[in-house]
Length: 197
Image (cartoon, rainbow, N blue to C red):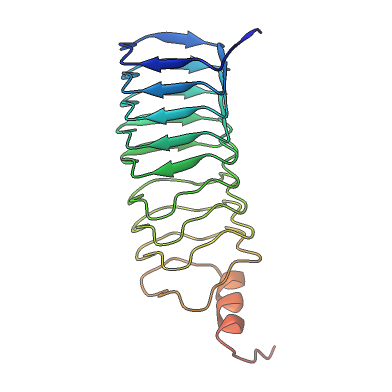
């Protein structure tokens, strides 16, 4: 699959376009309209999305590796088994958002509003959720190994069966969260408690 490389697209109207399995490398998309666009096996490698509308777009087994998404909107977007390793979201609307599986490791969500998003069973290893709003988010069964949650609001979050190994658990307000026994023990140890069995 030949990739489109080092091209700057400005103001393109791609409403409802089917991109299929196209590939883009180091491309910049400025003020483009991807509303209701679809991809299937597409690759966006080190691309930038600046002021882009990705509303109601649907992406299946596509890759957005080491991309920057800034001042954009993903209102109603869906990602099915996609890979977004190393992608950064900056001042971008991310809800409502549907995430069905996939690899979202090293993703930077810092300061984002992710209320109500379901990340169940998603791999989020070393992703940055610092200062994010995570109220009523589901991380059920997710891989959050070495992720950053510092400063995040986690009221109503479901962490059952999630792997939070290496996460700084102290300093978070766990009231109203849903956790399992293993995580409860980890939180207690992080707070300095001595656990006897």
